[in-house]
Amino acid sequence: MKILIIKYVLRFLLAYQFCITINTFAKEEISYMRKENIPYKYVPWWKFPTEAKIYSSIVINNDGSMYFGSYDQNLYHISNNGKLIWKFKTNGEIYSSPVIDKKGIIYVGSTDHNLYAINSDGTLKWIFETGDEIYSSPIIDKKGIIYVGSNDAKIYAINPNGTKKWEFKTGGAIFSASPAIDSKGNIYIGSNDNNLY
Image (tube, rainbow, N blue to C red; front, top):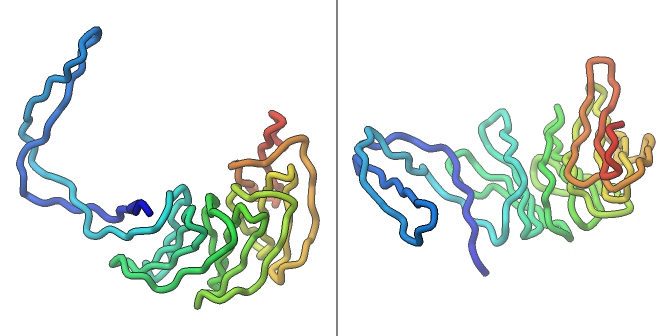
């Protein structure tokens, strides 16, 4: 299976003091290349491989370790030097970006219709099932309530113990839009029905 790479933390090196620029002119099938002197080159400190595409954003913990999801169905927890700490397998691709609460619980949605709550040691805390795939990334309010949208056109409010607090149905799928919370606790979400709620 093709290995896709996530690159993290770039540093300066004084090697290879040039870059190549490419100019393509209209109505020509030839690209012209030239070297230009530049003072630095960016190179990765390390690379961490997964087995599928990565659309999930990285969330960095207080200790510098990182969480992110992959289309290989795993949520990864890696150290800040690129070493695997643990991975948690869901039953669907992970497009959603994870979020961490004050107690270190990680929440992430999957295309298997579920929102997962995962303990800091990588064990499952609970699963909340929605009616369709979850691409939306969850958010957490000051009281620890988790909010997430689903392709079933609903936004869900979920208690910290995994029970449903409420749900609200929009007129279309909630694809990649993630909820937002204002200072008064009001929730905002976009929908495929062309409306912001």
